[in-house]
Image 1 (cartoon, helix red, strand yellow):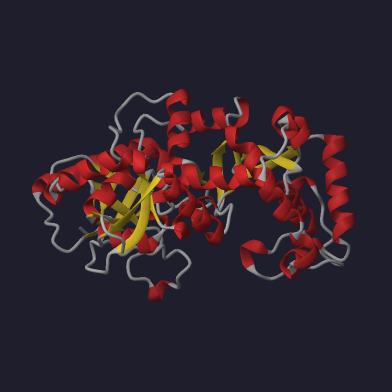
Image 2: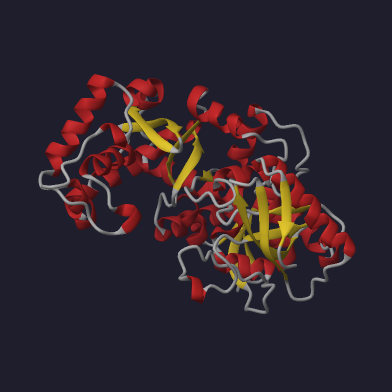
Length: 412
């Protein structure tokens, strides 16, 4: 470690991340499509997921930051204004379209995968190129289509037997063309994608030239740092999954020489070793301010409580969550039931700046009831009357958002 490297307490690094990701702003502020657009730009993206135990992940993520949020606001930005669009980061996400030219680098990578990836070729059938051409020509002729609009010959072409990914060839072709940038998702019907030609649905963006390789790396690293505040080169590269760690490392070295970054050592909340990272030099004074605050300043039993989606960006890096919050979180939906430690769709509880517990909820839509199967409080967190009241208020807010008539806690 070089002389003069700043040491950042885990508490300050945690606050910086929460602040960057919009979780320290007042959630009861006025919500509108414009507010939502600014929030998604601040976060970078919002992951979209199919699981609907309580509500879709993207809606839960946005509701945790804006209590007046309504799903129609996101649909407006995606489907009508098109200031957001749906594509891939580390997973399917809603992304600001102002960054569209940077995705042209990703399109090129995806287009080559059909030639070298056995998984894709198995789903595209006996003649992948012909299947892709047929799907492209059909959408060009007939307009926006869903996967269901394409028939499949099950007798001659049985589907791969692997659950969710047992796609028919036309569905695989649609996804391949979407990931490669030739198609765009214009809307969803009952959460099913509707695809159209990008050059028709987003003609102005489609016509834009790609950024240069150097511009792309600079954007990927700089924009990630603005949304992480403190990060390692590996974390920078992982934010968008747009570049590899060596490219992020070279960018960091150059930015350090230019004085745009500073080296820091980040302490761990779980008693682990300090971790070398970088931070924006323009944020050095703010980090020092955050470092001076006591950990008790961010721990309250009476403050508002937020329930985080399992796909919240703050939880995405499980190791970082453990280091900064001392919170061991694993998403167990794909873990066999008997091996689960907590539950199928567990939502962490954020109160102030601390992850204080977790719940195992399920929305029973047939009877309009939000049921919490169990509540777990973290070690050292007492379920005081003020804290349990904060949880009850948060559950009532969530019930109102998803349309549940009542809330029931099975086991606290």
